Image (cartoon, rainbow, N blue to C red; front, side, top):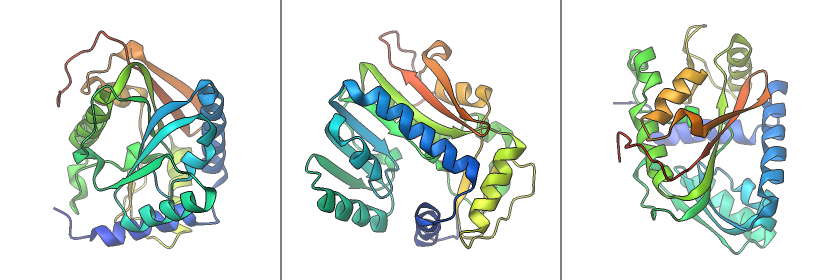
Length: 253
């Protein structure tokens, strides 16, 4: 169990999202991610779900291509910011659901697209102050990640796609993470060379290899041949999963 309050972690996430400072490689990855998705979504409109939607920015970006948008956000403060943004931008086809996406109630085969962007996949874990919990074995088969993604994979229509932005496990990524978090008033508590970066304020962000991604997604019932790695830059992938009818049985199916 974690002694770090949810409010503390939410505030750390909020500071990172709203900071005017962003290391170049992270900023570049985000920009290319948005460019790729804007191009891919132009044939819409689509029913879209967004895991960890933050301040709701993406529904504004993708508004011309949205039939409806469901954002899932654990932070009530971020959810209020999203609602305010949508009101300002006159977005009337978006809803936000507050709570842990791993426990979300979603209709099966409902969405055309499932999004989990801005490195949110690497934030999903069982929360604990004991960082030894996050061993290589845990990171290669993260039960909370599997529970969350399995749930939304079942909510994806046959022929639909999921897109996940994920950090590559390379030293350049770790350096960018540490730089980013320290510039947003957080104190990094993990030693260099760990496969994740954690802060005293409760923020946690994992990095991935193609093998660890395939292992985790495989446990969700997703076949390796249905996973496509789009290089964003040296530190990040946009991982695409296309849902076909030949489903394997996932851990949480």
